[in-house]
Image (cartoon, rainbow, N blue to C red):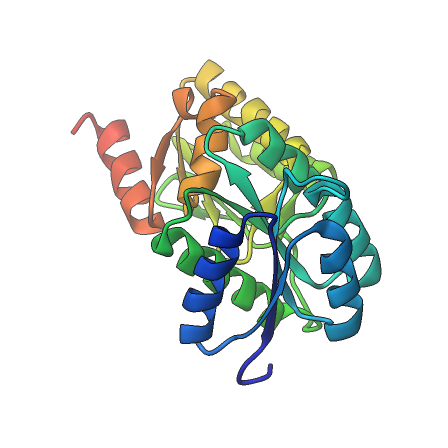
Length: 247
């Protein structure tokens, strides 16, 4: 990857463009700015940046159309959508269109740093031989699933099959999302089915590695009522051990 990779920011609010330019330039990125979707698509075709930030709500060509066209031109590009606080339904629609991630306005530096880090890691994995999007193992009597790719309808079928094979012997289940993991609404549906089945059978369940933004979506759809969420896999396993031992 270039030492100063290009990043394109598309937003119709000048204040946001200024903020992105200051932060990203300070990080060493070669920053390209566009004030609307049409200009942004022209810049993308000319400059071919690997990372794109685009606002969703813009006059003319909106962020959804920008996302679709960029993914058609370069499926590997990392497109991070910018949404208003509380617009989780729009964020979910963007994830269904293969957005890499999303960040909410007003944009915090921590959220920007997290989105950039995840995009860079996904780019570094692009083109390399990859293992399964979801893998499973047993640890301490628990079923542990690691999501290292896109959790969608196809990969979700394999995840549910693995759970059904392990659930009778597992005291609980942990699902860990790596830095290169992502999901869409179908993947969220899989999580709901798996966690509901675990609860029905009296099995404890935890999620780990979930970003703060994605946690908002999981809360909106009710998943956080079915499970506890922890930052690391180690924290999640410790919680399961205590919960199943009565400690």
